[in-house]
Length: 76
Image (cartoon, rainbow, N blue to C red; front, side, top):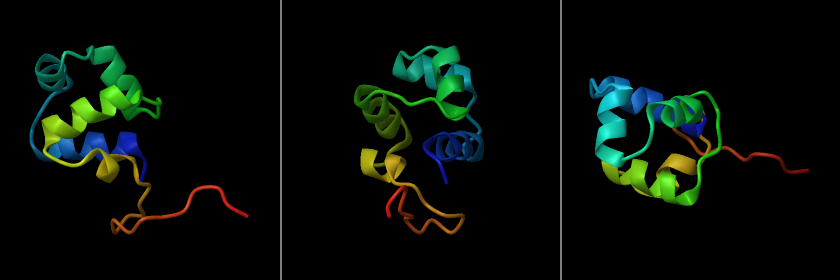
C-alpha cells in the first residue's frame, strides 16, 4: 500500500476531509490531494501528516501489502 493510499484511508476512516487536514497541518488542499494521488512529499510534510494522524513517520512511508505487512520496493 502506498503512502497516498494510507493517508486517504486513514482520513476517510476518521471522517476527515482534505480541508480538515489542510487546516490542521497548514498544508494546501491541492498538495494533500497530490500526495494522496501518488505525489512524493517532503520529510517535513510526512512529519506533519504523521503527527496529525497520531502515527510515526516510518509507519506512513513503509510500503505495505493489503494486510499491512511491509513489502520491499525495488531490489534485485
